[in-house]
Amino acid sequence: MQEAIDAVPRGNQSPCTIEVRKGVYTERLTVPRDKRFIRLVGEDPQNTVITYNLSTATTAETRYTASAYVFADDFQAENVSFENTYGVGSQAVALFVGADRAVFRRCRFLGWQDTLYVNGPACHFVPQPLAATDANHCAAGRHFFDQCYIEGHVDFIFGDAAAVFRDCRIHSKGAGYVTAQSKTYPEQTSGFVFDRCRLTGENTCAGVYLGRPWRAYSQVVYRNCWLGAHIRPPGWSVWNDNHNHETSFYAEFQSEGPGANPAARVPWSHQLTAEQAAGFTLPDFLKGADSWNPGDSK
Image (cartoon, rainbow, N blue to C red; front, top):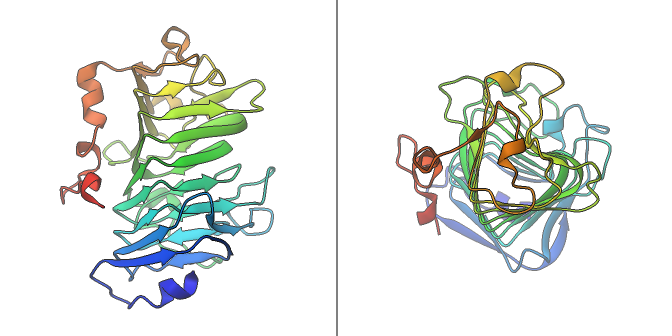
């Protein structure tokens, strides 16, 4: 699959579709920053799999463990699985997105801890440990996940991005945390929105938190989501006893299911009104200065 990416001309400025046949592709995939407008289309997400198995036990940092890297803006993927098979016990990323205007439709993201790492175009570094941009100062990229499946157990959707997950299944494979968002300053256009998603779980023991604040201004909103019984009544957790939760924004709007328990939520979280929730909808939440509408990205 990397050979197909390599065949796209550098400086590409026109849509380029790469059709991927069913198969397990055991390789590390990189979409370089100067190869925009690539559309990766698999035959079906169950049987079109990009996979590798690095972790922080074998590399220098979490960001060097990914099975696939997307650095190019305007990237799209459909019907493809991104997988890290390392297993439990260490951070192991399936996909790192360091780009803007990325769209994923009917894709699967498979792993345990730190499965899906979403960031922005300032976070441009090579997969192996060379000098890299400080992750604390990355520009927030905009990403849209439509009808996707994402699994893990600890912080398995994380990073500093403006990302919307619509009609996705978010599956916890053990006790832990769904999100670790890392918005770093109040004015930054960064945050995760889960819209009409279904949260399920297995082997979760004491349960799962909706998120914990990796950085001081972390922002996560669940809109019209169905929450399974594995979601802990408090909903949200602090981060290692620091004070990030005091300046973070964690909220729900019309959660449903056995895990929906607004009366038991931590006092520093929010239950939104319809007017407040309207600020976290497409295309407004992701439009930016260029009025991007990922619903038009087909």
